[in-house]
Image (cartoon, rainbow, N blue to C red; front, side, top):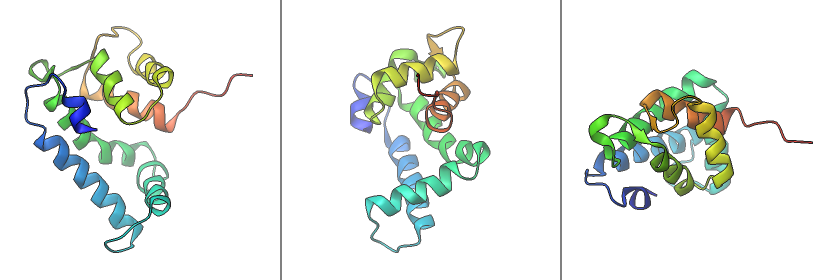
Length: 136
């Protein structure tokens, strides 16, 4: 995931890797299963740590990762993430293209070209915590 996002970037991805490891270790620790954890138990722990405790907990857990994402991305000098890079990151995470576009549009409905840390957080939160209702 980091390698896929890093294509074309010049910054060292070390902080991004470190922040992702911190997040995964925190979730695994919350699962309370020692050194080995299965996919299902990890997903349950993610639900508990990231989603069940509300937006403040979600923001607190993801902000270090997203801050490192901005610093490692090709637009690091401006402190923003271009829309195409945010879409590439979301796709690297496994988000379908249409869902990634919707999350970006919901996070930054005006200027759709550059996303600040808060914009990126809003986009990720919109996708994970407030998915659009299914169409009928």
